[in-house]
Image (tube, rainbow, N blue to C red; front, side, top):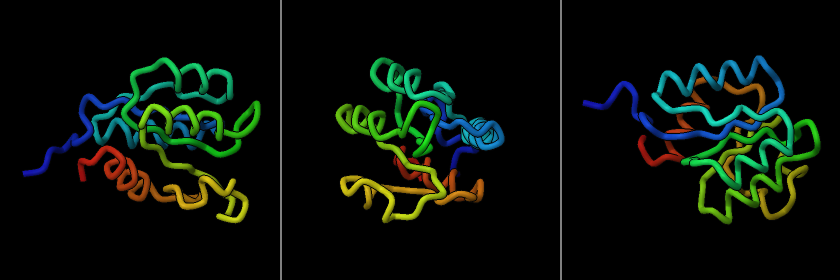
Length: 124
């Protein structure tokens, strides 16, 4: 029987500057049992957490206050931490190195977010 909280004890970094989306992500993380790291609405805070926090996966809005989240993605990639971009931008607007990276297109369904997160954590 699958656990009702398959991501119990996992830490998910959330980089998002739209409060309604943050609330949806927090609800989803709570439902699957994961702990939220952040959320960060600004690049400087996101960079600090990406470098220092215990993180198992991350949800990154592409454009946030202070710039874009590519520097955060770079740190996570160096640390071997999986992440998904959440954005309204299409593939052509991504930097080439991230065009094939997991992405959720806004607006996205809660179920799609849950599926992506569980996939990143390897607990589907």
